[in-house]
Length: 483
Ligand code: FUL
Image (tube, rainbow, N blue to C red; front, side, top):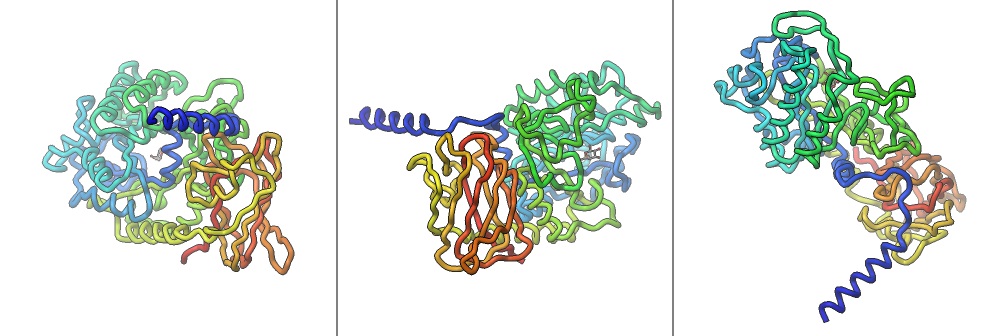
């Protein structure tokens, strides 16, 4: 009897799988799918540079400079959590070269500072607080090291790789390994105080260096301006382009050579590349304040501005990486806590109530019962509406039964099968006329459309007007922005 049911289950799974649409183009890996779910996360900058009130430490600050009066990882993480952040990346070593963990690779580290009487490990403290509060953890270890005497020589790479190995071994599974393209220039370099330049096409041997990441941290998404998993959006303003493709083909600016971090096709980064070779969604990194490090004269962005950035990053299929800058106490300033909390509340309250829930929904074409139109309102991103293979244009109509007022529309594709839709319009029924309220292009993991003004209607129609293959939509939402 039991085996009969197993057989039945196997057969029905098979029928479903056979009938599912074929994937289109590059598709996300498991690791990238997990990243898409995180949506908003933070990047903490806190090194001797904070105490020098600079953005880029020269690498010559006395380790004793690093002396927070009241460091509190829990305060920082709880503020991040109130802001709706689901992950934290800690800058474990910035360009100044100061390691926030007691590394064996350089003397220039936290054990030489007064922090916890030289017994502290800030990477551990932040990691523990993040995990305790349910946030994922990641690290950024700057390849450029303005302190290290060996920087620029052929001995430095082994040091950098050993630093990554330590960070990858002692702090549990990481969701991101963040790498930047800032390379070489002037610095302290063990007292030489000179300018050192490196060839960034070869110096860091990224193939093998990222091989260490893959081996020790298979869950870590590698971020850099060329991917591998997540690409830089090409600006530090916090937004992707209005039309955003999760696919990308990193290229050197000459269009011929292979791209390396610090040398990529940045003009194409905000929008991505339609039918690019790789699934490589964008991360929009932007500091909460003006600088990445804390400066007493700067103020955090307002909750309104943060919400707008959320719509223009997460709402364009990208991720929002918000820079958090603890002050010299080692905590986030009250103003930052307030801004984060209010931003988190706007997001939470706006998206708490899908006004389309319970609506009647019909589609002009449906692949089969398993891919019915109602799947877009079940709140589950794993189920979806799909059309038949040869149907590349279709519409879906939502009958709200009573009039509803909304100003944000949310659309989601089922990205495990690729980014398919290229154009669509949204109409609402008013005085017996269908009025177009939006003309769209890309959707991807999530598209949040903010209308110029709230609309009141009992019927909404979404017309998919262009797709190279059959259409898939996993979720639709109608929301009223919470003030
Ligand atoms: C850049 C760095 O040069 C900045 O200082 C900062 O860390 C930013 C997040 O990445 O590449």
